[in-house]
Image 1: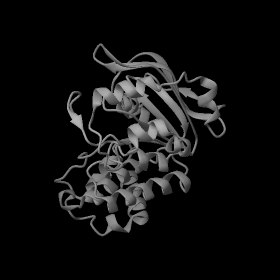
Image 2 (image 1 turned 60 degrees about the vertical axis):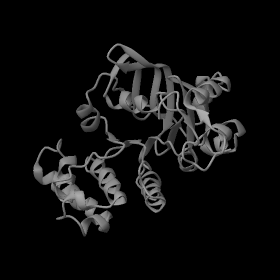
Image 3 (image 1 turned 120 degrees about the vertical axis):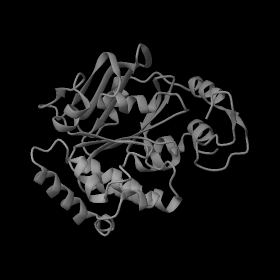
Image 4 (image 1 turned 90 degrees about the horizontal axis):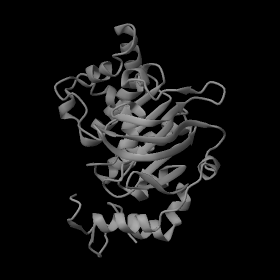
Length: 290
C-alpha cells in the first residue's frame, strides 16, 4: 500500500470500512492518540518477570534509523502482538530481535530473571542455536522444489548431526498428521494453509523458546487463518512458547495476544492487554473497522 494512496480498509483487513483514508492520515491520527508509555506500564502487562526485553532500542537498515528508542516487555509463555499503520516499524522490531538489521544502540535481553543474557550482538544463527529464538517469515519461505520432509530437515540445519534434525522432523510429523501425510510431496503442491503450517513447523525443529511470527494470516483464506491461530494458541498454551507477532489483521491479532502494542513512526504509541485494545474506541476506529 503506497503512503499516498487512499484505502478503504481503515481496519487493516479486519472488516469493511466505508470511509476512504490514506496511510498518511492513519499515521497522523495514530500519532495524535499516542500516549507516553512508561516502563512501569510495560512491566505491569507482563506475567512474572520479562522473558524478552528491548531497552531503548534504536535500529534500522544501512544508516537509516527506523526504530527510535523502542522498549518492549513480554513474559515467558505470553504473547504480544504489534499493530499499526504500514511503515510503523513493526516487522523491523522482529528483524532487530533476530539480527536481520543494524542496531545502533540499546539492548535485547532474553531469559529468566536469574539467567537473562544480552543477545543484542548475536547473529541470526546464534539467536536460533544459542538463544532459542526462531523467526517465521511472512510467506513464501519454503523451498517449493523440496519435499515437505526435506523442508523440515532444513529447519534443523544447526543440529550437530543430520540424525538429530530427522528425529526432530519426526516429532513434528507426530504432532501434525496433516504434514505427515504429505511428507514425500514437493512443498509447491501444498495449499496455502499447509504451507503456513510447514513454515511454522520448520521453525519448531530447533525447539525454540521464542517465536517471532510475521503476518501469520497474510494471503490466507479465513478457514486457514483460524487454523494457524489455533496452532499458535497450542504452541503458547500447551508447549510454553513465548510469541511476538506482527499482524495486519489487528482484530485477529489482538484477540489472540495477551499484550498489544500500537506502533507509529518507529515508536510505541499505545500499550495494553490485547482485550483492552480491542475495546479502545480510538484503536477500533483506526484498526478494527470502526
